Image (cartoon, rainbow, N blue to C red; front, side):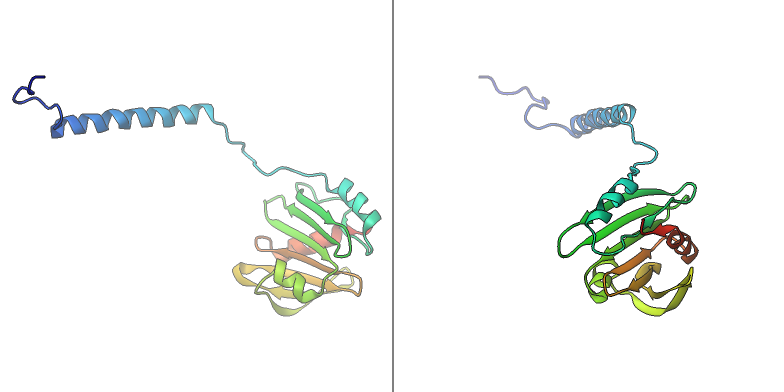
Length: 180
């Protein structure tokens, strides 16, 4: 084995060698990133619409209370989440996006008001009453501009909540609700 020639960078790279290596690696990483951008497609609207009416019809057969769902949603509004939990602690959830992509959530739950508020409107404080279509709802205001309207009956606690929609959108949504 022979000793490296004087001035050879074998084993001890020069600063120029390091800079060139980093530059080559940077070009490779940028090329891979650019290729990823070309072959990856992100949908314009990643939120999937759901058929809430079919689920509502099925859930109404199992629910022991008047399960609420919109007869029809206003033009441009769409449902993006729906579920019914059967059994002794029945719960119904419907998530809706308005035509301006503002979220409204409908919850119906057999648990007491305090439990439902804690889960779906944590930190909300009572802020008066609101009458919609002859029905009185309790209004709760929460952190981050959250508005929650609640109606409690012996059978079920109904909660309509948002942190992005104005109270007028809640009024419109509640106006569409029906039990069948």
